[in-house]
Length: 135
Image (tube, rainbow, N blue to C red):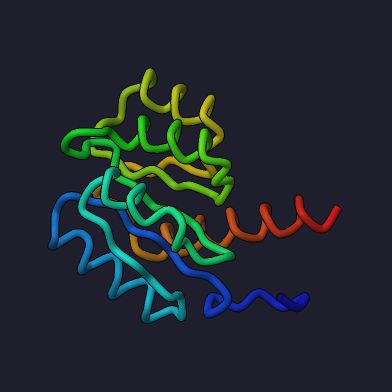
């Protein structure tokens, strides 16, 4: 990756059990240039863990069936997947936010989110990650 930020350099892995949310996020992210892959559960993402492209970022819903988004973060970290993770949730509670930050998520957004805000926060997370690796 060069010094100029290019969304097309990244693949965003969208994990949400709601097909409508996945479709909306995918459409938004692809309109601004990101590649995307969608998964409807944490388990589905973990099953394809060897196929995660580099560089990648994960956007995961907290309220997933089976494994929660927070449990997914733990499992990804256990598998040395250090890609930035953004959490989406309908829950605005402090305990969930604190746990997410303790698990080193790049950002935490509540639903409904503003498209521009999500895109800006995703870009900021990816830029922070790139700068951390450049040092």
